Amino acid sequence: MTGFFLFVILGATDKRAPAGFAPIAIGLCLTLIHLVSIPVTNTSVNPARSTGPALFVGGAAVDQLWLFWIAPIIGAVVAGVLYPLIAESRGAFVRRGVARCSPRCAYRWPLVVGLHAPPWG
Image 1 (cartoon, rainbow, N blue to C red):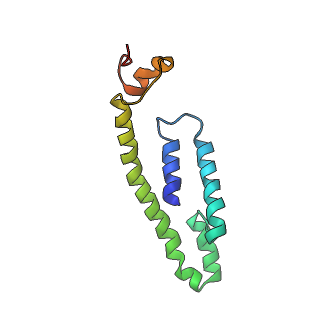
Image 2 (image 1 turned 135 degrees about the vertical axis):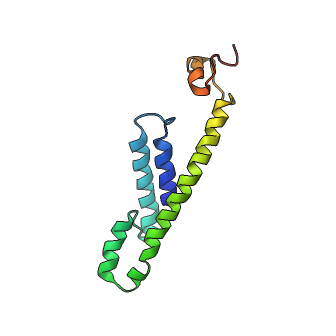
């Protein structure tokens, strides 16, 4: 879940993403994570939020606490490594001129592809 959440955060704050929409994407993603995971596992997205109750309950809750710290760290590392690879390959795809653009957006073509003229003219 943390990996998915980090993918959304990195994608929403990427320099190629539309400006001003990052809070909406991040907020909706966090809402989706809560709606899906809380009914299933009573999860908390914040490991510190899991630590407090586990310390008060003790016993098995403390024994399982390591998972609430390690799993998000692994998910974040995986997303942090994979996102630049995926985003860079997509950027290379667009920079090579493979992206399609209608004549209406011809004025944006140099910004999107890095060329000085659209391929049709």
